[in-house]
Amino acid sequence: MAERTKSWEKRLSGEPDELTVDFVESLSVDRRLYKYDIVGSIAHAQMLAEQNLISKSEFKAIKAGLIEIGDEIAQGRFKFDKRYEDIHMAIEAALIAKIGQAGEKLHTGRSRNDQVATDIRLWMRDQIEILQAKLTLLQKAFVELAAEHTEDVMPGYTHLQRAQPVVIAVYLLSFVEQFERDFIRLKNCRSLVNISPLGSGAIAGSTLPIDRKSTAGQLGFSDISYNSIDAVSDRDFCAEFVFDCALIAAHLSRLAEDWIIYSSNEFGFVRIDDRYCTSSSMMPQKRNPDVLELIRAKTGVVYGSLMAMLTILKSQPTGYNRDLQEDKTHIFAASDVVSRSLDMAAAIASNTKFDTGKISARLDEGFLDATSLAEYLVKKGVPFREAHGIVGSLVADCERQNKKLAQLSLDELKKYAARIEQDVYEHLGAKNVVCRYITEGAAGPDQAKRQITYWNKQLSQR
Ligand code: ARG
Image (cartoon, rainbow, N blue to C red; front, side, top):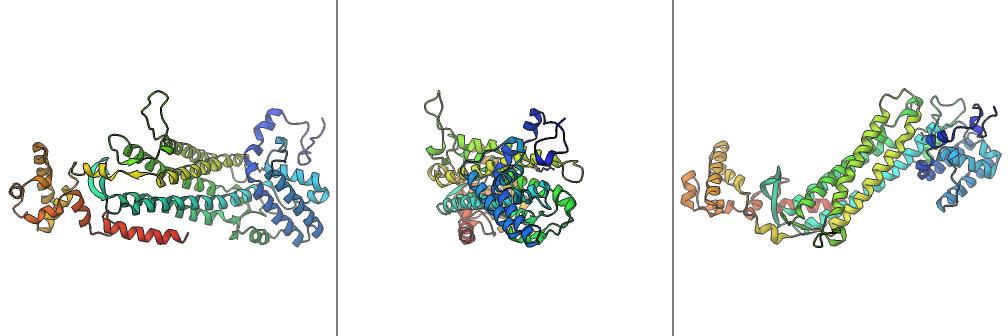
């Protein structure tokens, strides 16, 4: 049987089954790495020239050829042929077709194994910055909305039951905190991503004098990897990146869930702008929060990518395995989904109105001030556990009489605890309560204003 036509497959006889061609190709997925593949190759070629492994003029031809190929891909003029399997071979083949023998020297001291690991790291470094910028925009939208509501009170919920009053600003800023941790996680992830595997070759490095620090420096990596076997096998950073995406998605899904509930007729706390709602094909009155529902659902897609990524890594024998090719599908999917959801969330947050009238009209329901009353008793010298019991009985009594705590007379209150005095009324009612929070980070207006000052300063530096 005749040898294969592809130069790197001369060891194999006959052409591959068409099914194999379709099955092994990753070009349809990894073509989006082309820019990184090209800058990585230019750095590698420059290093080869520095090390006299190729001549200066060969380097120049390689560089010019790769830049042309990059332009062709960017302009949609490049013909992707899946028989070249992946973006690395597609570009190398095009380069050889363009510049001839110099192109044949590009892959000196390199394998697709260290090449693809390098490309992914370069891509991820950029993607992390993009996601961080989007997180920052979202945080800014939340801080801006929070600044409008530092005095407005809403119920704080635990178990989705009314718990204690909070100012709306602090509720909103709770998301800014979550997104901040997402930002920091990505920053930490970046430090592990920003290491150059280039020069590790297929698994064992090279007998040629490859200068790994040169390529790492050119590509802006902070260091090189120090074990060639690990460098080509390692995709921990991919799992970590997808995990970071998954937590962003988790946070977005909580926000989506809140606002889907809050925009319902039953709550009526927020009005999502019409631009982010859809209607019903049958019920003419409907304003549905579909965008938020899709943000919530897409979290499942990202979790799927995380599970896929972890499972791909499981039990792989040491060294590079083709299994690793499947990583890209999931890092791309996770980051694409999260990227779009972040954009949507920021747009929605910038256009959502809190209906403070509706919220405050029902603030006296649900005994939001019960804990404040118990703490009032503590200030009067009653042990907390006893105070808790007294207020529990008072609430039960109020429920029987269909009254609020603040509607009880001083005499009625005194029947439960003799130490209660006229000043008790300053501790009742949701609005009074929020102004009495004195702990750092509490959900009152003073703390809200301090938090907003902090975030404005923090976020303006980004
Ligand atoms: N397309 C491959 C990937 O994404 C590139 C490396 C292939 N290496 C190999 N020896 N087959 O992982």
